[in-house]
Image (cartoon, rainbow, N blue to C red; front, side):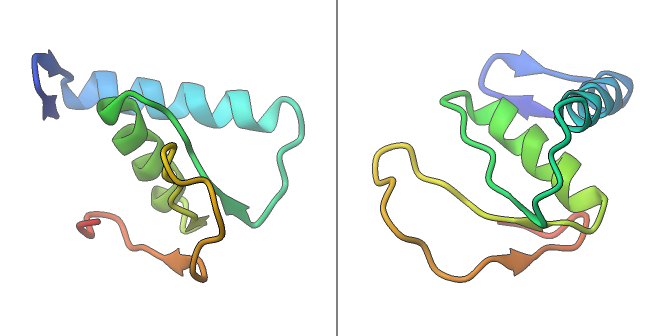
Length: 81
């Protein structure tokens, strides 16, 4: 995965995604909808990939406009944003 000057191999991507999953499960995150929010474009994409790879619903958030959003939508792995 490439994003600007940041690059990750598939193994690095998989390790990061698994670490994120563990960090979410530790405090008992059980919400059916997860909205990752980060200023880092690469990290936001990785969070979206992790959530959608498990078939969970992703709620997109905009840090510059944190108001109400439309309904969440289910993404399939590999689907473009």
